[in-house]
Image (cartoon, rainbow, N blue to C red; front, side):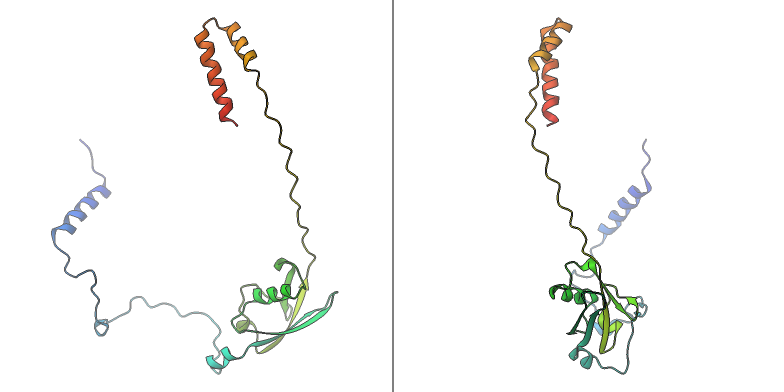
Amino acid sequence: MSIASPEHEFVSKFLTLATLNQPVLPKDYKKPLHQVNSLGVALPALRYKYHAKKSNKDDNDKGLKLVLKNIRPPKFTLENEFGRNDTVRQVKEFLISEGKAQQLSQLKLLLKGKVLHDSGILSELLEDEATITVMISKAEAVQQPEEPTPVKEPLQIPWEAIENTLAREWNDSQQVELALQRLQRGWDLTK
């Protein structure tokens, strides 16, 4: 006598009940929009900075003028206009394209003494114009790959000496041959 698990019972009963009646609605059924009473669960409001005085058209047309300054040697000042939806990472990539750094990890951008994170959107962080301080650290030393070890010549296994040793220990030649074959197969598998 076997005891059926509760999951098995549920599945078998569900499938039995599901196949008793034909589906009432066709597969491509769509409810008319005027009959829809609710849209489901209400989602919480998104948390973002919204400026009611600004219109979206004006924001998208104008770019952000950034002055990028490095106060440490080598000192430089760059001016460029970026899109409002550009990220801080894109500003760093601009600096790399200008030849001021080699890697993104070398650059830190500061606005009023605070570090700007790569994922930050410029329009959320600043107004129409801003001066950003650029900090450039030393380039990380690129690790040169280690030279590969020279390929060693394959080992010459003294199978005859092993066979002679086995033959001295065992008198049965079939047993010696079987043991030698197993040793050779094991050696081949480790290559």
